[in-house]
Image 1 (cartoon, rainbow, N blue to C red):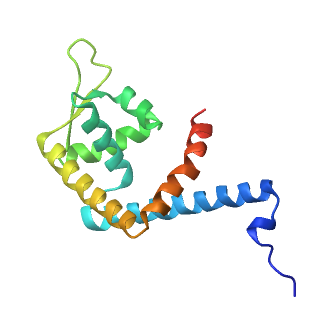
Image 2 (cartoon, rainbow, N blue to C red):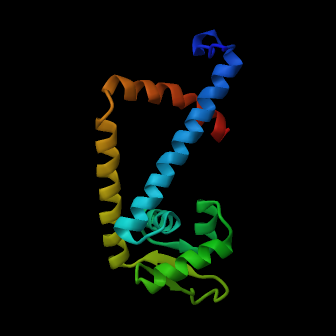
Length: 154
């Protein structure tokens, strides 16, 4: 029977790879949990939440093209998501008088209220999950992951 190598005895290259894989798995688990909670508790998809969040931050709305650029998805994907949010009366889509080929989208008051409620619930969950960890551990995670964010963003 062979012994499993202890992390400290692994070459630095392997340790980095293990950390990267662990971060990826953790991210996927968090995202899966978020998707499930949004679906079950709020009858909302993560892409719908992302659209509402983007429009909420923007305040005055934006064009569909700008929305798709900010979300880094195709115009076609954004159109389907916005269609569902319009049907729910969370988003208003209007063609500007000067350019009928494009559409502006913005939150309705109902959409802003709905987003604020969902975001507050998600924040409470995130805080509760973070409170389950020791403060020192959270600072350690932040310190360890900060360089990854800088490298990924370029």
